[in-house]
Image (cartoon, rainbow, N blue to C red):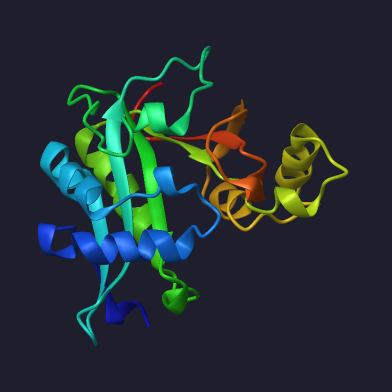
Length: 210
């Protein structure tokens, strides 16, 4: 029922609900890495057009959200820690002249999964990239299914996901949206479900020469 949901720019009155969604979506994430209301307020201040929320028009409730910032990317030296990339969740390192959009967060409340809300958010992100003339979107994907395969190295696991031999609840979805794996990031964040790894993924804006 896509007509039931609408993507809007997030606003200060949503901050506490956004923090609730974050906590519900990432129960394994370290406490210090979870976004709180103060972080969402900072996002809206430093880069308001990069902050999206999905409203349930029937209830007026916020059901999902995404947070992004602009930056320049050195693809030869892509390894980094998540908290460094997002300036400890405040996004105050946002570069207004940055050529790439960096995905700091995307979260759909568990009660709203299965309605295509993440698709709405990714479409909004890609529309923003086209509107701003950016080169594309990058993010550190969380391979949330990796802990189920202790017999595999992270490289083997990601290769199997890319080949379609395994399905990862996060990475597989992003690959279907046109993202490509650029590399693997050790010690990306504190989440045992993904072995603390991140997978650096890239979506290229087809309207801009790379």
